Length: 321
Ligand code: HEM
Image (cartoon, rainbow, N blue to C red; front, side, top):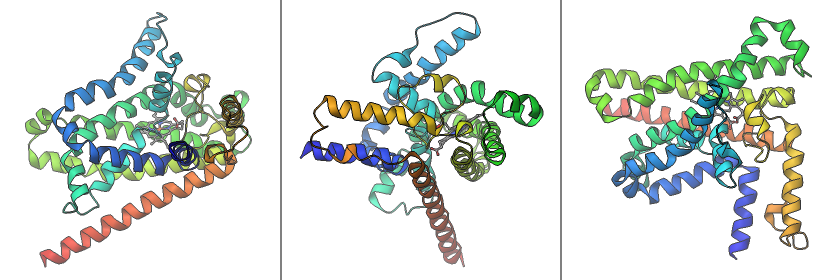
């Protein structure tokens, strides 16, 4: 029974990574809301550690010092890579924070989430900064080169579709705008900064979160569309190819990386006997199909948010009249 459940979870994570992570983190946040509120500092330290583990070797490299690469440690390395790719931790957390504003706070589980909105915002910063650190240093310069030194870029990059390359590089450059908007929103999540700012200024600044959500949608969709049109220039489907550290340092993962992941999964399945009795986790989905599923998930998540947010606003306006 547990095996079937575990297999099903694995399958859902592989087929619908974003929706599975959003659901799992919503459940966890509701269940742990009291503990997150009470021991916020402990959560910050534990969940901030992967960021530190990425930042230390990164800073070391700037000064020419080669430090230990934590991403090579089993399990921990997987978490670090998921932090870098934003899709497993950072993005679901931002989606949960975004949805809180559109839901009815009188619903008990929404109320529990609302009580830890500040803490979740602070926690979301760790995977987002990890993602930004790597992406700003690796992807951003190359993406900028596409627009500033186009011919030079085309000589070295594997471009199979011009439109796809344009969309991917546009989304990477857009990442900088996202970062610029995200930093003040994140910093003002801390009580001390918020108090110093004053309520009116703080509320005004928070309006930028809507711009962040809109750009986040464009960033995520363009990465997928760019990846579909021009596989080597875009993302593979929102999830990290776990064993390929090269992708963490170089240009983002393409669909070409997925067969290796697939082989590894089948190899593991055979190793632990799953070869004979196939479970849900062994069902293979074509990487291209995964990308379309991810795109549809993005449209559904952001579309329903927009609908709920506008409905709430209309209701409020109706009550005021
Ligand atoms: C210059 C800065 C940035 C660049 C170049 C960049 C680039 C990328 C790339 C290459 C990917 C696909 C590969 C992967 O999953 O890691 C990606 C995904 C993503 N990025 Fe960024 N990014 C930047 C900043 C940001 C910031 C600041 C945020 C959030 C505030 C963000 C949010 C995301 C999300 C949520 C995904 C996953 C999309 C999905 O699952 O569909 N990025 N980004």
